[in-house]
Figure 1 (cartoon, chains in turn red, blue):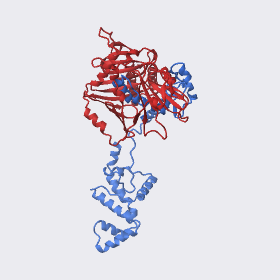
Figure 2 (cartoon, rainbow over the protein chains, first blue to last red; figure 1 turned 30 degrees about the vertical axis):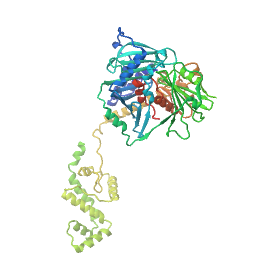
Figure 3 (cartoon, rainbow over the protein chains, first blue to last red; figure 1 turned 90 degrees about the vertical axis):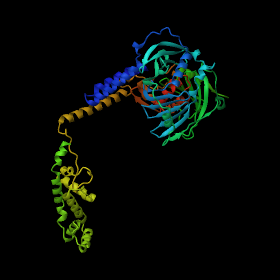
Figure 4 (tube, one colour; figure 1 turned 90 degrees about the horizontal axis):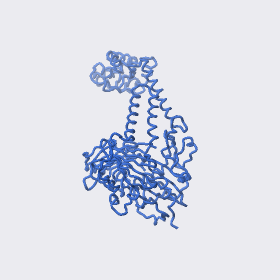
Length: 359
Length: 256
């Protein structure tokens, strides 16, 4: 997927320069295309010159690395531009992050697609959509789960992933350790993480499929560490919903048993994390919100959505890929299952085969 | 702009002359009653003649036009404040039509008006934008023509390139959201649909196939909604805090 993109960009550039006359707008377009190529290739090609062989430093375990990265984002203030690519599309956002030791706040302003501002205080999240003048208030409990999960005995990450330090590279102007988290079976993807050398902050992250193909990547294109980000200012922004229609999707906690579902066989490494349905005024008509049953192996997560089968809405069973996110649908009697997550298709198929109705 | 300024210079003379010339017609049938209006304007009418003058204003169809003409003449002569226009729109339009028919477009007159009130026209006076300074230079038209031709070519190039099976290199690209049959899943991994088969693709109701340069792209609103929900509430990962949340917030996902 990555290769397809890098091949295509120069092709588009060729098309642009062929068909445009030598005029001011054409020059502008060409420069724009050149800038795009520069940006993309800057993300893709490893800075080989910066790579130095790993010296005799103490090797950290996968848990130590993950804890270090987690702590780095908890203790730092920074701002920067984050670029996300899933192989065929690119998104970018402006990021502000601040922490006062007790709580952390973050602001994400999208630079591509529909304008959107997301502000987070710990696990409280509000998303402003200026075009529709709506604001969405949510609680994301998954944000508070770590690093507690890393410390508990149920932490299975080292059983399913190994770690490999593969050198030092420069990302967004900072030297970063390149760490590869390698899956021990084919039920999960690998990760290549660039962790800023001094602080441990994650400055770039790739999700790797089979044969090391990059399925998706996230990177700071520009980053300012210890930036003067003001928490009070972010708080004011977060609370100022004047002129916005505020929606509060309510999650109703439930259990799969209560909903009448169970897994025949578990999928190695994946533990159930939460199960809920959604009480949402936004759902059209008589639609019932699907049950969402979430599994995680510590790094990758899978959601099983189960809802009543509706011949009008649900077509034939199918599967889809979007970056690293795969999905599989399956009809189970009168119900419709959509399994999706950042895992290989085979893992989703195992979930889909294992889910059954409690008689 | 320069051209317009050159035209401006003789304008005061034109304004006065034309306004007077134009108003000769309403003045022609002027009888004693209408000349009473003129006297009234100059504050020279006696109180006993005032009723007569006002009655003439109501009776004569030209009364209103004459009243306005007198005011314009007075304003122009005094040349102090802006010229007041109180004429009826139909009078104004009729004037324009008459002028257009004679082919005489007096931009010079309009350019002579004070800049503060370009919307207040004189009767029969039309404001026309001067031709562009490079209008006469054929070279510019040639450049514009070539540019628009190039734009059309660029657009058609990308359209042709993105058509299924087109020659535009879509064969090198994989679809962003590739559908596979369940049988293909069992065989392991997602297989992508080649561009040639895109026409035969029958998506589920609610799914829309869009042909892009990257191949057919299936926009399935339901699936996208679930993906968004997965990212919001299912992102249970040790990487969530350092990167996952930021990534999800950055994604160009449809907002529910």
